[in-house]
Length: 104
Image (cartoon, rainbow, N blue to C red):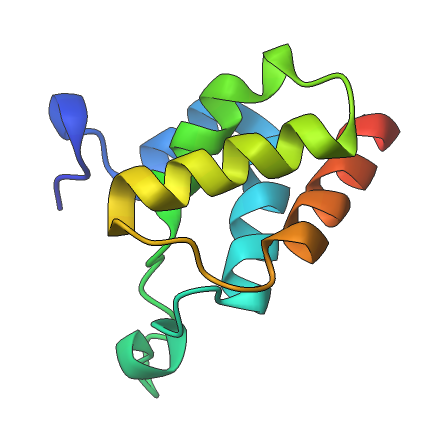
């Protein structure tokens, strides 16, 4: 399975980016801002890591974040880039990501 630029698989990205990546991906999957997880889930395999590219893009930009508002802007920008729209509920996603960042 290739996964975007460079052909890196989701599992390889997760290993390279560590626990924060796992947390960001988990938050995106749990909140499912675009409503794709139910459609993409497989009863035997589970979720298909639908938000891995977005998690990578968000994680790549989080170093510049100094507040929950910064994280919200980053998350919003990533979703607009990937989906050409801003889904509802990104504030709560950003707040959870900010909380995880502060714990790290």
